[in-house]
Image (cartoon, rainbow, N blue to C red):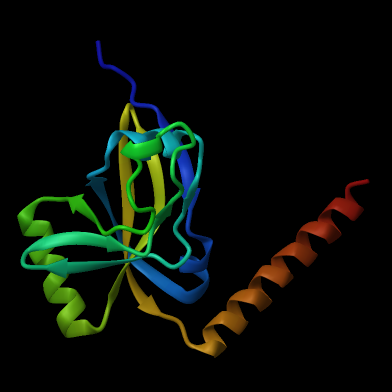
Length: 155
C-alpha cells in the first residue's frame, strides 16, 4: 500500500511570476537547522528578494529571510544566511550551463512541506520587459471583466 505524500505550501513568491517568465521548475531540498524548521512551520519566511546561485558545483539560495524562532534563543541562526540546496549534481550542472549561456536566472518560486521535509521549488526564469507586464495585466483585467459579466448574466 502506497503512502500518500502531503503537500503543505508555506510561502509563494508572487513577485517571481510578475517579474519573470518561469520556463521550467525544479524541486530541491534545503539544508536547515532545527529552529529554522520550527519558524517555517509558523509560516515566517519571505521569498520576495531571494535568488539562487551556483558556486563550485553547489546550489545556494541567497536573500531568503527566515525569521528567528521565538523560543530558540542561542540556537537561532542569522535570518539572511546563505542556505545550501540539495539537488543531483547532473541537474545542477545543466542549470549552470543554461544560466551562463542563455541569460536565465534561478529564482525560488515556492517553499513547502512534502511529508516532513522542506522543499523549495526553483524556477528557471527569463526576465520580463515592461510591455510583457502590461500585457499580462491587460489579460488579467479582461478575464476578470468576462467573469463579472457571466456572473451578472446568470443571476
